[in-house]
Length: 326
Ligand code: PBG
Image (cartoon, rainbow, N blue to C red; front, side, top):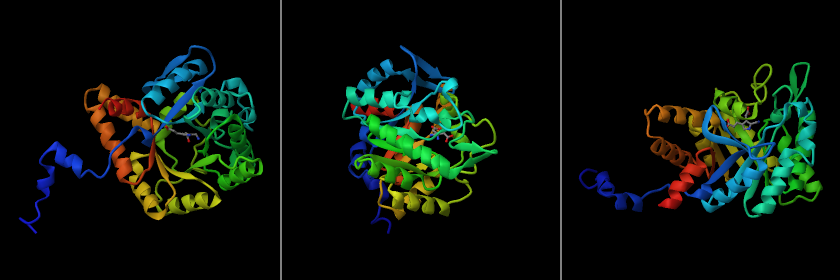
C-alpha cells in the first residue's frame, strides 16, 4: 500500500529499469525469411516490402555470411517458382534439383551451422495459387498431404534442418513425421504453422512470390480469425502428430492466441510477424509518422512477452545489427 509500495522506485534510471527487466531480445530469437529466385546476380526489391529483396543463389551466400556475422542463426527459405514450372500437383516441389533443394544444399555446404528451415506448402508451385491440389474448385486434403510429406522428405534429403509446413491441411504433421522416420530422418525437425489464420496481412508476401490464389480465398483451410479456442485443438493435434515447434500467425493482431498457446503447451512457440505487418510499419515510417526502430522493437518485445520463444521477422537483420552494435 502507498507509500510503502512506490512502483516508480525502480524506474528512476536506465540502469535500474534494465536491472529488473523481464524480457530482452537477442539475435538468436529470430528466424530470417529469405526469398530465393533463379538467375545470377539478382537482387530485386519487393515493391510492397521496401528494402526487402529476392536473391538469386549466388547472392544468397553473401547474405548468409552477413546474417551469421550478426548472430542470426536460422533462416526460413521460400522460393519463387517460374510460371512454366507451376501445375496443380506440385510436381516441381519434389524435384531433387529444384530451386528449393539447391538452395538448401548450397547454404548448408556454405555455412553448415546455420539452421535451414524450409517452407512446405504448394502455393508457390501451384498454377491455382493454392496450398493444395485443386479438384472441382475445392482444395483436397489427403492427396495434398501425400505430396507435402514427399516435399518435406525431399527438403530433408537436401539437408534441411527443420521443415515448416505452412499449408494448414489436416493430418500433414503426422504424415510428414511418419515418412521422415521411415526414411531415417529422425533428426529433422518440424516447425508447424499450427494456428495459422486466413488473413489479409499476407498480401505483400504473395506479391513477393507471385503466389496469390487464382480463385477464391484460403478460408477452407486456414483458420477463421473469429475463433480463439480452435487454435488450441489445432496446436494440440500438431504436437501429438510430432511437431517440434508450433507457430501462431500472423503476429501482432494475434497476441492473445500466442499467450493462450504459451500457457497451454510446453512446446517451443514461434510467432510470425508477417509481410503485411512489415509493410504497414515501413509505409508509416516512410511518411515520417512513426519511429520505425522504436515501433519494431516494441512489437518484437510484445511477441516475447506474449510467450513467443522465437520470432520470424523481416526486421530480423535490422534489429540484429542494432543489437550487435550495442
Ligand atoms: C504459404 C505461406 C504464406 C506465408 C508463409 N507461407 C502465405 C499464405 O499462406 O498465403 C505468409 C508470410 C507473410 O505474409 O509474411 N503457405
